[in-house]
Image (tube, rainbow, N blue to C red; front, side):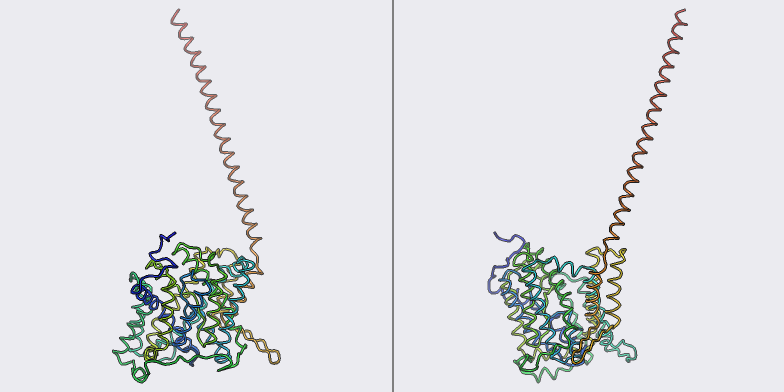
Length: 484
């Protein structure tokens, strides 16, 4: 039976002209975020950890792997994950490129393990392990933890000289992005960050902040700088705890995106192809991305929005978009052009981007109606926020073994443990007792009020009977007098 909610259903292939145009739309939707992740990771680490061509290629390959694992039943596009910007940079500073990429591959394996567990024992344990009170603060930490980077990019950090060109370019990037997010309609509303970057870049070029010489020197086609384990480095497990805990957060993001897409296309993707298969696809894609030197992959809400607006859920369209992304990764001049984007442009966009991530964490708390009247929720959320944003570090060293857990990873682990240890059952019992007592009081009040009314009614009836009897006696006496 044809899906009435979609113009082109999941398994349907559009005509070739439509197919190409619809696929290009998805490329635009994922493009801004996908290329922004390697740029921001490199700036945070102060070195070239990721490259844009590899990020684009691994994004496309990852999406094709996902389509294969889900048997073409889920129209999801995978792109670079913002949640791993700070962890990958921190892992690089701790263990070099080998530490960072080993960490990304480990994240993919965690996904695969969780997918296997869900396949055999269901997903109830995951929901208990990661409730909204843990996920919300974690997402907020991811966004707010990157805030100093955005401030530095627009030269507003303490001790930095005021430069009007930087402020102008950053302001244009920021305002255009904000206007697109609030005023734009249709497809333009899906790509506000990409439009903001383009607008800021044009202004930066006009004020002389862009050097196009690298574009002229670059070749039209070039091989992306893949970084492969055992060929370019030996696996390094020193930074695993810096990256791996973030996988717990992105898994919840994965579930949320699939739930949202299910509502859009009118099919329950959590049941068919199943959460085990969607997580498997995401995990294998992330492992392959790390094995090629790319960032961790994640489901892209931007592309889900495109599916909703165009009413086209075709996996064929998603697959072609993935092939286009792989092709773009081999275009040398295009890559060189992207690398000429000034920091001021990225800083202006990042002011919104990082705040946008943090607000999404707040939305998780609001949407799930997390009750902060309960002390447990206050303890879990506040502890996570302070640990994650305060720069807390736990270093354990025993001989050659060295484990360092810091920032977001430490906050995630402590938040999960606190949520499991602290109980709300006693509080709920007290509340239930209080509410039952209130109900009893209400019942008594109602009973007493009914009794009072009944007494009043009986008194009225007695008085009415007495007065009527007296009236009859008076009438009879007066009649007798009249007869006489």
